[in-house]
Image (cartoon, rainbow, N blue to C red; front, top):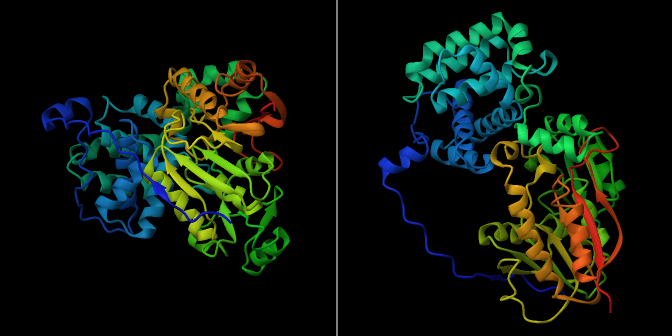
Length: 466
């Protein structure tokens, strides 16, 4: 019988002292995200301005989901406007290199941060292929100028915004051809990222980069405790939703919808999870009654999948109590039970000394394999992050190995494309510990297409000799 969710919190470090406002402004732009404009929430201008605020925050180091959450809260944005802001911001992240190159060609001088972000959002909409363009070009230009006029950080640049966008419409192809001479604009990745992909995957690098610039599918995991895949496909068909089975429990919707519209989601019949990520739980080969550790567990997709497949005594570990709470929410929705432990995976201070039969180590990494879902990652990461994160991951793996019972299995997972974080890490780990390496998929490449519609994950499975 699994335990009810419990949450063990470690005392947090003292908060860093706040900078005085004058000094904070010297470090990053003081964006007025809380300014309430007179724009109507159902206007494109309202959504463009909200998305621009989020994009500007990403350029100062904030992850896009957190930036959007801040905008939603401060603007008290209604659900429809939130959806539009999110769509525009994610489009902008996927086209940011091209948009910034275009702005460099057309703007008389470097725009202020919010002005640059607003232009980048508009250009992302204007450069969408005609067949899938969400708005008419004249509407985008008109509403972007309206958005600029409505905020004190952008109002003085209203004329420049209008001139730049109208020039783009007049000279569209010539400007795009010139901009795309720059690799940054052609591929929409920083140069160090381009170099890393080419080095790691010289035959597949173009397909990998192209896949990262596309919107991901909505893939579901069917909870086989509550329905078979065939039964759920029939439910979707009855609801008028086209879908395809792409894995043992994986169903891909032909058209993404809001979570609230997914049949059976609230009742725990399905969860949202990439098809590649759904391989983890079956690889662990968990049996009823086993003692299992899911390290770095948040947000809990793999945790829940393990418990859908077996009645295990599972501990979900994560260093972030807030993210760990999401694991608890997912368990509750699915009617599952586990022990939630807030602690760092590279530490053994939380461990009671009882060995685990199975350990899932989904370790920290650059997340270079999931950029189609998180397109801001490419702009947030730096070249040196790879070594830093690989070093941390090695410490985590070494620490967890001592917690594994003889004969037990440890599954090492990353969502990275860089061998330093994946295959090289796995090979070095096996040598350090004399671990037996079992069959596992290795590196999955996110190259798109119907047969390989998954993120770029890496899997290595090890057994501890008795």
